[in-house]
Length: 204
Image (cartoon, rainbow, N blue to C red; front, side, top):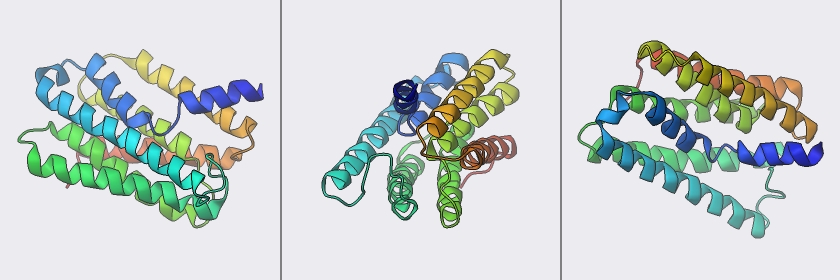
């Protein structure tokens, strides 16, 4: 069962979640299909933001900056938060400056990601919040908000994402990386930040 939990943990890794979120949105939301050049550019940006932090974390592991790739020590968990904030903050600024038109809802998705990372980093000062569940919770929140705002009628997609989050929560607990409370907290932060900000339309 431990091997299964490890496989689930890597398949649903936080690195892939923003890219997966955009891909799923494009597949289920006809509105986004109206902007293929913007979508391709955003997918490229997210692909870079998937590869670059992954290489950075691997390099730091090889250099002994972090003790393991799961980053189990709480004091080391600021590193991935700062890395993601740097890469996604830079990307958000680039999108706002260089791209002529991006649907407002997608700008909210990017901005809410930055907000959730800041909240996660603050929470980390007191407890080891689950970044895995925060990322997948964010995906669930985005899908739930788009489903409601754009009247997609894709409740089953949201339900499948929530089931995946439950499976991931089990995996992180089974691996001994997080407690139940840390898993629930991660999902709640990810879901609520993305869902509420999308429903309110908040972005800079």
